[in-house]
Image 1 (cartoon, rainbow, N blue to C red):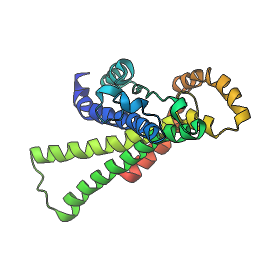
Image 2: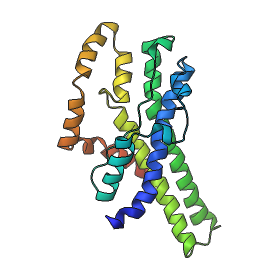
Image 3: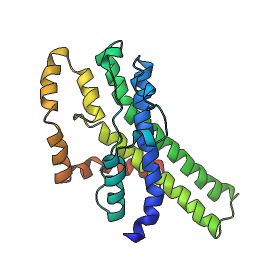
Image 4: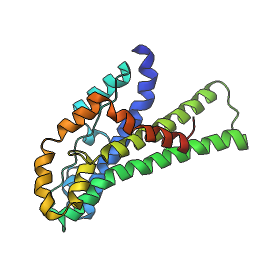
Length: 220
């Protein structure tokens, strides 16, 4: 476990930042569509503290990182009051989708920083890497690659069309009105589908494209 402490120190801040960006994006979009609930509660911020869930953001991720177990984590859900939205069903599609979209943007930002570092080192030769500088450069690149992989994984996972994931909210908003009631009944049981995905290892199949895309954006 002790040998994984450096990984924890590098990866956990990236996780906190990525989850905070995801949740803040939901709140920001809700505010744009007329619901200030999240903004008034201080949830439209990159400060991770308002988004912390003691189990999903602290306990489970840290235990998983230190033990090498599959990573499971989440931020505190952003409250949205549909009564404040101008067109609740349509607006909720954008609110739900903007969380994963923010993770895609973050993945591209991490990839850009990582490739910029590679360019400066390999082509311009402006950095003389030795000793502590080589260690720092390696750490920065590792953080960038983690950021790409993690944010692509968050985006893909959250877009799975199962409640309570964001993809479930997107699907609900896109369904015909007559199908919403049926979907809502199904959604009450859909948590079991998530458990099946975890238990059977099917999520690994889902994340194969994530690994390929991450290595394309920022090769190791």
